[in-house]
Length: 159
Image 1 (tube, rainbow, N blue to C red):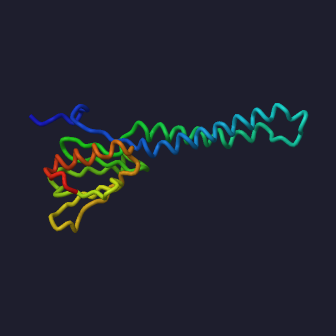
Image 2: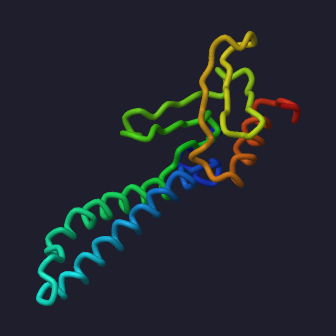
């Protein structure tokens, strides 16, 4: 019996959690900027040169969008290893641009020394394939991804 596609226990998910860190930090800075502008506006009577509280709307709106992006990057998958193959989700419109690489079409894989790029080859001559950036994935999770792909393809541990 073929494995169910709806079985989450049979897949490995890797999110863009390292990339989300920058979104979280910038969202926090924008939130603090909005708070400071609003707090400073309480003293406009003594100092009319202080900004109007409406100026806090820009950083507040930016913070909301950045927070939504950070949550999305933290929760949603970037790469999923399933029994069928490797699912790769792009940054923009992941549902429409998702790509499935079946295990049968993959021949070999390579990584660079710093584990920032995974190259999946479609033929033995290594003339066709796909480069996958591992930078969005947390550094401590990259080795798990590389090892899982290597074992599934039946390659030795030498890189």
